[in-house]
Length: 119
Image 1 (cartoon, rainbow, N blue to C red):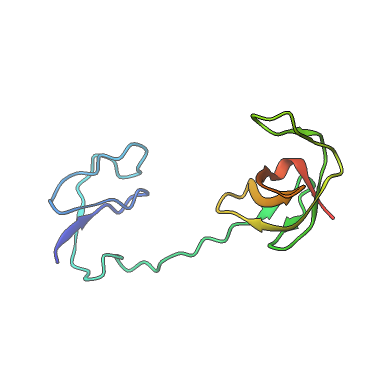
Image 2 (image 1 turned 120 degrees about the vertical axis):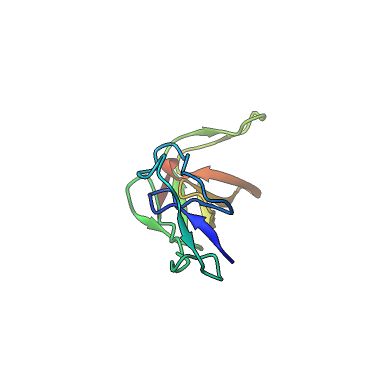
């Protein structure tokens, strides 16, 4: 399968011979090069991204950790306020390094890591 790839920072590809039009690419407006790879990976190995989640003090968090709130947090759309020092046990990490899933007082919620401290 013949196709064309950009050798710049964008890694773009096309079925037609053309120039790279990606804004910010180091090879913008230059001709793409022919590629005959069968897997579409262009000789690159698939990268596995490891997300490192840290609390407000920079301590690394992992699934199952216990955390406490470092400030009072009102629950949106409710009159409930979770007080400073409230403990969340058995947290679960999300795809976003700035958020975790947890249960506080029986409610499953998402909390921003900037308001948490590992116990």
